[in-house]
Length: 483
Length: 92
Image (cartoon, rainbow over all chains, first blue to last red; front, side, top):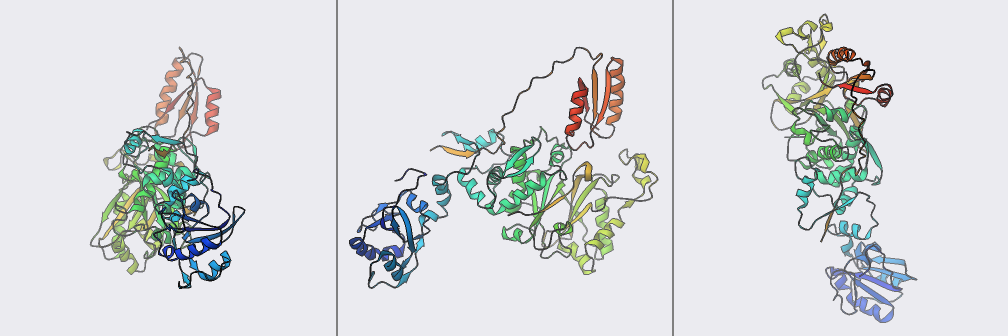
């Protein structure tokens, strides 16, 4: 056994690395025997120290020899001079073995060629542990030892590291595996995270992604979300600190959403899909653990909403009759992208009877008017998420995004007199200065976003209400995913 | 076998700063009133300014550009250099 971390020196001559479990390795045992009599041969065995027996082998039980020599296939045969490999061949190939060893007539009676098997040092179940054992650690986060009698899940709750649900313990093995999802260096700074204004590294984002339950292929989406959130336009500080019930909502689109298995169909805004459920959660864990944003502290939400655990879904851009939110914000079709929106929980618009686009536009407008308060206009954005059955009503009439939004908008104008404080017997409303305005829209230009998601049957749409918009609050931020 | 996990936090070491002693009187002191730009914050601060004047304090008024973001660094510096005491109007 070698010292952990150090690369063992190979003996000069011919070196073969084998394992008993590999059929090709057992097939070429007679060849090894032939070689042992004619050249200086050293055999390393990965799984069974008694294999091949004759010739005898050194046991590479900790896989140090295999790891440090990048053995991907067994058998591998190398020619070593002065402790350094000068040539190798993998699997069984008579001409290659004869050339490499300089011995003619090897393996009489064996087939000319046999493919090798996977080396144990690249076994997916072992590789993360080996990387930690032998690789020079590239991780700089503080190591926290869990006491023998301590339950690691309870320990993480006790330290305040969770959002109230259990998290996956971020071991070095898991974090290294997570980092395989990006080409970015662990030490790279991703963003400065409010409220504590701490620079967050790719490594710390990967730790949060592990804890949230992400797979490595989700990491580029999480990194992009962190970058988008920590911008002056999105203003995650204000979204965290506000008394309103909003949190970051991630709307994803592009072929990558399908590659990582995101749900844009039935129950897209709900539970049950790992990518949808964990990508948004990872962002929130970064805000909590790195930024220091916790409920009751800087987070002053009066009610909050369940989506603050994490709210992320994909648009069905393949079937959308009107493109995507990312496309609306300048992203080319076919490019993976996400939009961050400061949103509350979704609510349902029921209209099961409209078959004409104007009727449906009126229904949607009537529901949108009540967002936050029917008499408060222009201050809040919203996302309208239409499912297939509502979108079809517009698509069959030949309406695109612009026509849909224009029609809804045309039914969202109210006179200032109807909206000012005191009107309709309600103190809430616009300042008196707006009383003479003939018509005020509910949404600012571009303030109503149109998404396409959901599926199966249902003549429904979902509305996700926003927060203080524009320069005084937050603007939706769209970013292409950085891999 | 010891299990080891990686620290998910910022790993910051917080610096504890001593508070400035509470003044026994406001007379002759400059008191800054910071309006965070929430509706009707000015109503509250107008009244506070009036009451402070009755106690002999000099009052200076400040305003954040928006209530949704922290006060800009320059504004914080301005308040810190010009005032002995500051009162912030937080609510609607």
